[in-house]
Length: 186
Length: 282
Image: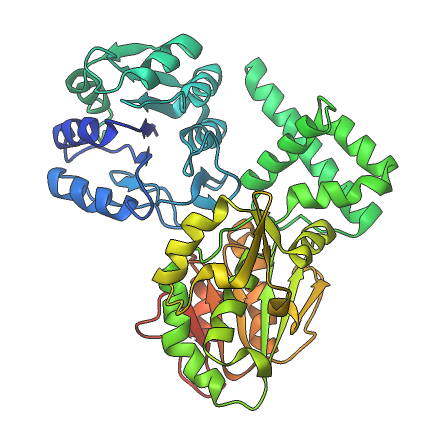
């Protein structure tokens, strides 16, 4: 089963608000989002996205399983990781490049569990988080999707991802959404 | 199997052997830690020690007992923040302090105190509530290095600005700077705050009950444990608490089955639980 992980930072909430409403209700793949937002803002982002998306959107809960057809959002203040038994784990280890949650931490742990079943998506952002994770995803046989830097409000993160990891698809969010929609229930 | 899959399979063996070495050589048991975070930390250690592979790290650890402190430091609870999650401290003040006040003597256990940010935060609020003098706080950690650092109570002054905001959000009634001395970009916490604190090594995996406590704080420590170890620790806490004692965990910790049968949530107090009485229906 395909699993989709998404990383976004500055300008990312806008990209997510563009992307999520385009997702079809029959999507079988779980989505897992790390978005750098301020302290305690993860809940607000989750509520906002839930209103725009036909799929259920909720905070990825500690120890709970990754669920098909659900959009899971990392809470503020914790790194979000995937355990080998495909459940969520939290960590309060040091911030990485000033960020917790870190996109790289999620991407690397998900890549090691899901290998070639994983699709990584890097959206708008002002730093290089996600690039290393996306490289790991590709190395382990997964697919890399990157928002077109020309469309991204802040292109630094997509550019870093393309430079360090490369991309299988680099396109505006509408096309990324169309690709994600191909992972519908059989 | 691709080369990358093979590399991960090999690394999984190396992590198993590292865990085995820590257990048999030093008695530290990491078998029931969550695998993903543990692997991350072991990788970081290999990098920090410059050993290249985890096998080489294991060899170094086996032959260098003098470096075990560093290794445990790298594998244990990381630094926290002063007054992290102010809502929890507000809940303690509103729902737990009034009950503690009714006891002649108060015993508190801070399990996994790391570098001490939380124990100082708690001591400050107890002091301001007039409860500190009759309190005894046990602050324990698996890492000797962390305990020494906690006892010293010196933190970067730059931490204090955000800490001050969270102190007021937590219900602090004076000013945070009344509780530390600033010097050379460092803040040294008031020594009086640890007059009633006993720092001690305690391993939640292998050690047992050592006191009878009215309140246990163990925030974001069990998130690193698998379900089995989490259940063990919750039972240890239940055995340590007095009747109706309180347990305070991290704001998003999921206590699952083991927790629900032993503890009930305290209404209006996020992350605060109360020991169920033996006859109470779950």
